Amino acid sequence: MTSARRSTVYIAATVAVIVAIAALLARVGADAQWLAALGHVIVQRHSIPTGIPFAAAPTSHWPNAIVLAELAFDALERTLGDRGLMLAQLLAVGVGLAVLGRDALAGGADPPGTSGALLLAGIGALPSLAIARVQLFSLLLFPILVALLRAESRRPSRRIWLLVPLLALWANLHGTVLLGLAVALAYLLCSRLRREPIVAVVAGVASSLALCLTPALAGTITYYHGLLTNVAAERGQGMWAALSLSAPLDLLLVATAVALSIKVVHARPQLWEWAVLVALGALTIQASRNGVWLLFFLVGPAARTIRPARAWQGLIAPALAASLAVIAFAVVRGPAPEGATPALVSRALALAHGSPVLAEDVVAEQVALAGGRVWIGDPIDAFSRLDQAIYLDWMEGTRGGRQALKADVRLVLVTRGSPAQKLMTETPEYVADGGDLTMSLYERKG
Image (cartoon, rainbow, N blue to C red; front, side, top):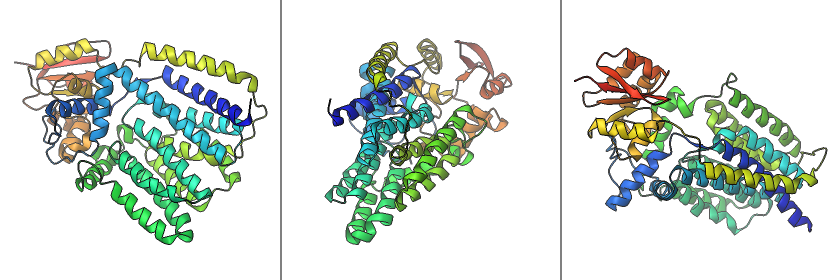
């Protein structure tokens, strides 16, 4: 077996192991099914609707910039259901990790070191790798961007202009393109500007303008502003929660990031890489969900200085075979159930008679995907700041959340034992009317 083929098999086995673990833990999280619901509306109407058509709260001001993601999620849901989202997530994870592996090898790392760096990053980022959300597109595109920039830093070429179509595509899929643009600008300003100032400036301007090549055009700027300044982000709630050393998964993230960072110091990254690492570290502290991008960026330089005591070459073939078997089993089984059962969602829609249902994030998306209406839900930045605050207060079980119980909200779905359920039990206008093992249904009296 040639050296190149041996390296490929080595990295393939490592990626397969990580994907297999993610497949076993796979589920569809919040910020996924609303895209399929909105994509379905677009396909039916052959046009992009104003705002969120399945929400009762006003959203006419919201510019829809990620139509391509909505259409993709609709196609996946219509053909394979939630298993389609799971498959897309695993494919994005696998290809993204493979790109990181190839980038590390191209940067001078050996296969064992690359394998070790990938395993550390994969373990630390497991929540992001296992839970299917709209960020699956970024799990693929962020590694491609990083690999392109590192290849350019080693040998500058005309490939730098690939930044423009890459960022334009990304802008139509996920808001993390803003982070991608920041990484690209860090390279252009800290590295390319000294060698080719005109190329660096023009590429930077073109890359920035590429973010507005969406159906929303100039309104894309408003979309990103709302995304970054929504009330959940300001409060640090839900997916915007800050890094916490009392959370086991956050501790795992910190441990793997520190282990990789120690190796990176010895690899002597370039100035632009240091700038990106500092920025990603700060963003991870602000919101732990950003940790996946920090870990991904650490893989390349860390792999160059990781020297495992043993290469474990004899385990490559068994690990690859076992991982593929596990992935096949997990795909046949499908993602772990999340939210309400389909039967409960159907019952809620029947009882609602077309009126909006008030439900927590994942369940609200299930209602929308099933053809029902919700009062508010994801994308939360599509709604007014007042409605966002009321909805978050309701999920937190505070008194201000009672304002979410509008006169036209007849049905409420809440997780058993949640603060929102406690609030509902203290609201005499609603009575419990069954549910399932995890969810309770409340119906307005009269």
